[in-house]
Each structure stands twice: as structure tokens, then as C-alpha cells.
Length: 323
Image (cartoon, rainbow, N blue to C red; front, side, top):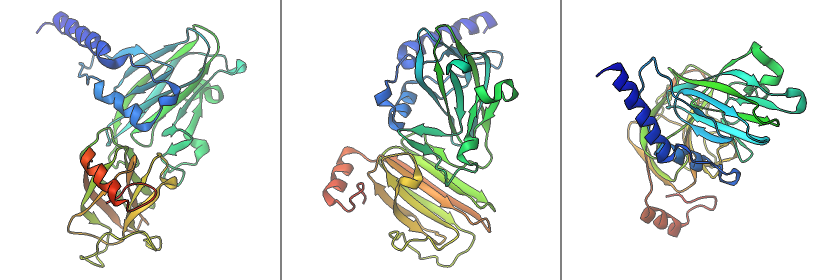
């Protein structure tokens, strides 16, 4: 296949993808985790050669899961804009901005946030992120060209920006980098499997699924084996006294510190442990003291309408539906 023909083919694919949903616009009152992730279902995955880079305009409210170069040019004052980025679970996001033409003295700003901020809630939560909240924001008006590249700590990141003057704007280049020990992840998919490993680190890691799901723990190693017959138990009194444990959380937001515990497991497991959670967001959270290599492997799938209705009929818990 000739180079000229390949370029023509790639251009045709890009045009087709634009007609198939790339130009969808998110209204402010629709910005939810599930709403953002729904854009990924219509986004065409592109495998361009290394000498080509995907480019398109950036919208005032946007969601991106691909690498490329994205340019925002204001046609009118845009005072409340945000772009959300998501990568694969084992990747982090590198954002580099260039050609920045904004007026910081007039109130314009361009800020990168290490994580997601949705409806007043943050992911990862302050408890789970390795850096204090003040260090998770990088403001172009404060740093200028001194810090043009920002790398996320997990597979999600975002930018906030405000621009008053028409034709002002900026360009960002987004790349994905491999993360050998993924931590604090938002899943792009409704079903799948994952393994979280914390290697001798005093930290907490969460895997967030923004759909009602059935989740099954296939393997759990907490660095010690006090009981091979331990079963999932309700979090009363829970595993708060243990330095290493897994907890399953449920809720309707993205901040794990505001979610409610569904179950705790304080011991290593050889057999499966399964539970259905009808919350808008289900989180597998691994808490580690740093004394051991902790590992949890699990799989998840979405609940169908019949399963949700059955759980609703049982009405086991008040805060969301659990079975």
C-alpha cells in the first residue's frame, strides 16, 4: 500500500469518525461520570502510524480517550469550560500545552487537574491521592512556560479553562504512558477484569466502575494468611483496625471518601467472593500498610434490568441496592 493511499485512507477514517459522534457536545447539566464515559462507546479507536498525529478542535466541554493534539480557539467568551481525559487502566496521561494566548490579568486561566472533578467531588479522593490537593492543580497563569508538561498520577486527568476574548486560545498535546503499578483507576468499560498490586507501599488504591455491576474477587493476597475460610462480611465493625484490607464501596458520586462501605475483607482468600451492587458507582479499594505486597484480582460485569429489579425488590440497604 503506497504512502499516499494510506494517508487518504486515514483521512477518510477520521472524517467518518467525526460523523459518527466525535462532534457531540456536553451540556453543563449533563456532566456526569457515566455521561462522559458514554462518549467512549461512539469514539472510533485510531491506529495511526508514528509519523501521523491525530488533531481536532477542543470543545468547551469535552471528553477524550485518544492521544493527539487539540486546539481551542474561542469564538465568544467561554467562562466555564472543562476537558476530561481518560486512558487505559495501566496508563497515565501526559499533557503538554503550547501556543497559549490567554490574558491572565483579565481573568483568563488554564489549569490542569490531576484527576477528575465532577459535581463537587474529586477522584481520587484526598485520602487516596499521593499529593495534597494544592499540588494537584497546575495553573498556567502561575507557572507560565516554566512547567509546560504535566503528568497525571492515574488514568484520568482534566483541564479547566476560562477565556474572555474571541480568537484567544491554546493547544495541548496528549500522550499516554505505561504505568507499571496502576492505582486509582476509572474503568472505561462496563465489564472486564483487573489486578491491583501495591508493592510495599503505605497507600490506598481504588478501581472505580461507574455502572451497577456484579463484582467477583478471584484472588486476594494481603501478605499474610490468617484464615483461608474468611468470607465477605459487612463493615460493622469492619476492617478499620487492620492495616491491610480490601473494601467494596457503593455510591452515586466519584469521591470514595463520601461513599458507603458494602463489604470488607481482612484476610487473604483462595476462593471467589461475589456480590451484586446496584449503585451508580462501585469501587474496589485496596488499603495497604506498606509492610506487604498486597494483591487483589477481580472481574466485573453490568447488571441487566431483571437483576436490578430483583435487587430493588429485596431492598437490603437504604443507600443503594445490594445483593
